[in-house]
Amino acid sequence: MCNIPRFAFALAVTGLVPLAPLSASALIMTGSGNQAVHDAGWPEGALAVANLESRIGWWEGPPFGGGEWHFLYQGNTEAFQEALAAFAAIRAPTLDLVVHDGPQEDGILKKEADWTFTVWVPANWHRLFNNPKSVFEADHPNFRQPVAPPRLEVYVGKGVDWAKVKVPPGLSVRDERATARTNAAGGAGLRADLYDMATGKPIAGAQVTVERIFDTVRGRPSAPEKAAEATSDATGRVEITKLPPGTYRLTVGADGYAPRALSYERYGERTFKQFAIELARTAAICGTVTDDNGKPIEGVKVSPSNVMAINGRGYTLPQLAEAVTDKDGAFALTDLPAGFTQFRIHHPVYYFSDLFTIHEVPGPNVVLRMIGAGSIHVSVTDNEGHALSRYEGNEILVEVEPKGGSRVGSRVGSAKVKDDGTFEFDKVPPGEYRIKSRPNPSNSNRQYAPEQIVTVAPGAPTKVKVIYE
Picture 1 (cartoon, rainbow, N blue to C red):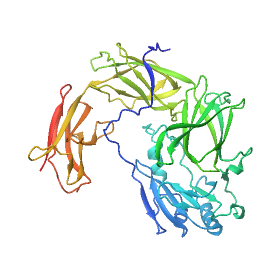
Picture 2: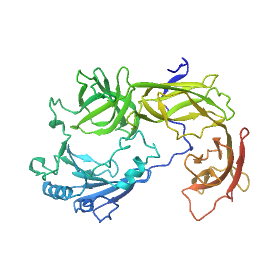
Picture 3: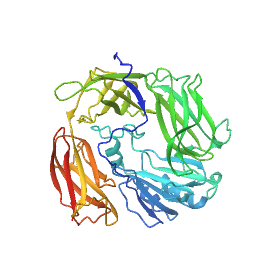
Picture 4: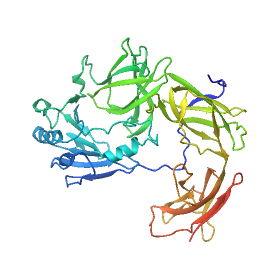
C-alpha cells in the first residue's frame, strides 16, 4: 500500500496540461435539402435511407477523422413508414429503433426533425475507438465497443402518429418516452441500476447526482449545477423524475468505490432513459518523479490520463485527480478505480515525454522521468520593428514543430500572438524546431514571413524575431 503524504493529494477541476497552446477544433461537414449523397462506406442499405425524399439536411462528425453521419427528415406517418421499411432492410448485425416524444431540434443544423437516421462508417469507428495500440478516447462510451448499429429515432406528436406505425418484423423498439415508464411522475426522468464491476452484485446506498452541464439561455456549456440526486435501494436501483429539459451528466459515488461521471445527454420534456452502471473499487497508485539523472524533482503536478477500470474501458472521474511531489519527488494518487492509467505531469522547467505507457492501478511504485526543457520566446514585427498582433486585419498565428516534422507525442503547437506581438512556448524539449507564422485566415500560397530553424536548449529561452515583409 502507498505511503501517502498528507499534502500530496488534491482534486482539481482544471483540465490536463495540453501539449499545444491551442487545441484543434472539431470539423463538422453539413448539407441542406435532399440532394443525393454518396455511400461513405456504410452498411448495405444505409444509402437508401440517407437519400429519402423526406430528408431536410445532414451533418457528419465527430472530430479526429469523422465517420458518424446524421440525417434529418420531416414528414407524416406515411413518410415515416416508408423510412422505417428502408431502415429495416439495412444489412447490419443489429438495428436500433428509438421512440421519443417530439418535437426535436437538431443542435447542429438548428432544424426541427420528425425523425433522424444515424450511421457510422465502421472503418472510422475502429480507427478511433478500437486500435489495440492506443487508449486515446478511453473515457468515451464507444471505446473498445462494437460499431454502433444504424439508428432511427422518431419524435412523435407532430408529424408522426406512433399509434398508426407498423413496426416491421424483427425490429426491436427502445421507447424513451416518459409515458412508457411505470410510476410516471411528469417531466423527464431516468432509472439507473448500479453494479459492482468485479462481482456483478448490486450496490445499495450509492448516490446518483444529476448535474446540468449546458446553459440553455446562453446556448453554451456551463459549470455543473446539481439538478437532482437519489440513493440506490437494496436492489441497486435509482429512479429520478420531474427533471426539466436540459443537457445533463450523471455522477455516481458509493463507499469503497471510485466516483464516476457518465452520460452527457440531452433530455426533452418527456424523455425517459435507463442505465446499467458499473462501479470499480477504489485504488491508489504511488511513484517518484526524477530528472534524467535520477535526481528527485519537487513540486511536479501529476495527473492520471485515460483512466480505465478493470474491464479495460474508460472510467471518467467527476473531477481530475492531481498530486504534487514532495521533496523526495514522491506522489500518490488515491480514489482512482482499480484498473489502469497513463500519466500527465507538469513542471515549469521540465518536460515529460512518456505519455503512452499504461500502468496498473494499484501497482508497484512507478518512476516517471522528466528532461530539462527550454522555451521559445517569439516576437512579431513589421520591417520597421513595430510590434504586430494583426496583419491585414486578421489575427497572427505562430506555429512551432520539430524540424523533422510532427509525430505522435511530439511537442508542437500554434498560438495567437498577444496584443504586444509576442508569445512564449514553454516546456519545449531540447532540439531543433521550425518556426512559421501566418495570419488567420490566410492565403496558403503566400509566405508572409520567412520560416526559421532554431535550437532549443534547457534553461535560457530561445528568442525568435518574426518579421512580416
